[in-house]
Length: 354
Ligand code: ATP
Ligand code: MG
Image (cartoon, rainbow, N blue to C red; front, side, top):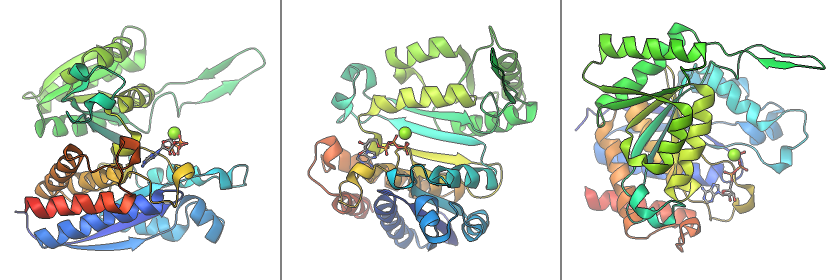
């Protein structure tokens, strides 16, 4: 058991279903804290549309300061039709907090439980037992390069520095060491210079620092195909910003419901930001309908990556797996439970495990 300690966790409930799923995950974290003897101090702050309504600013200075000083940050979701066409956009709050916290790697794990494999658009035999994690670089590449436009042409510059590639590669290799020990680095090295640099740097970091990990390189076009044909072959997938954006959406449909999937955004030092991959789901907000599992699994990633509490993270993941196997699910997965009842089912499963 890890040593008991006090941790400061900032909670950003945000908009739509954000407050409901954040509350569910905080409830689970409180129970984990009690079991392992940790003190989790939670402090709630405004972001997104809720922050615009209260202060006019989607990322108030007070929220920014609290996040950078915290041990970790848990976010619900931001945005919604209420703020469409307004002067400030809720999503600005999210982009700016990522920047303020220096987050450069976005992680999206996907596990397909055998009991939910039939909900995938792919054949059960193909997705059953999938267990992979995508590491997407967040700060470089074509999204951030200089953009030009004339009447007859447009361009987006794609830039990567050695340092940007090194830091995300290290994060991916380190995670592979705690998993099945395999990294698949995805690029387009047959055509793009940034991809040739990407491949060189990843190959060097592997040889110098992580020779015990198995490394393979894949071209993004064939990777898009392989992910549909044999997703079970992958452990850690490491890729640049745009390829990661596209592949992680492709991968997110393998699992059944968007409400299940967590994410983590990490920097090299300081707190990470943890949130479900779904948005604010305004169509079901405030009705106790949202699946809280994506946020609860994000809380597990928070424990593992920011607080280094591996056993505690494993407990949450085991409890979620047990609950899904028992069919105690929300409506998106065909179950009858509301958000609160689904979170309580996870809490009961944690108690049963301990
Ligand atoms: P964003 O632009 O913020 O990503 P979006 O409009 O693309 O938002 P979501 O808000 O994720 O997408 O909603 C997409 C669909 O998935 C909606 O029908 C929504 O109700 C559903 N959905 C999203 N999250 C959940 C959840 N936790 N549980 C159940 N259904 C969900
Ligand atoms: Mg979306």
